[in-house]
Length: 138
Picture 1: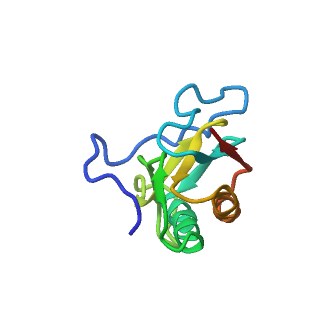
Picture 2: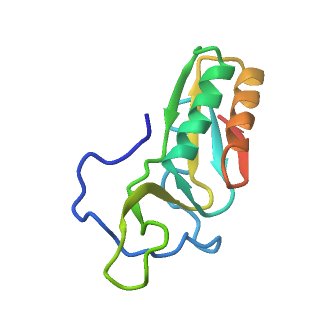
C-alpha cells in the first residue's frame, strides 16, 4: 500500500526544488528507534512507490523478522497533465506524492536482527532508491 496523506491543507502545491547538498538535514539525522539505519547522502525527491519498494526489499530479506521503521513520509503532491493535452487550461491533477529528502536524513531503521542481515537488507533497500545511501549503526 503506497504512502499518501489522508488529508492536506492544500490539494496542489508549488513545485520547488530538492534541497541542495549545501543545505543538509538538521532533524532526523540520528538513530532514534532501531540499532541500524540507512542514511541518504544526497538530496532528491523520493516517491511513495520507491519507499514501498525499499520497505518490501527489507522485509523480504529479513524473512519478516525484526522491526522496521520508515522515517520519511511523502507529503508533497506532484501533479501531471494527461498525455497530448495542450498548454494552458490550468494545472494538472495530483498524480503521486514525494518526500523532499535532504542530505543526511535517515530513511529506514531496523532492529531485532543481526548486523549482517541488517546490512544486506538495507543495502538491497538502497538499491531501490534514486539516492546514494550509507549503512549506519549505533
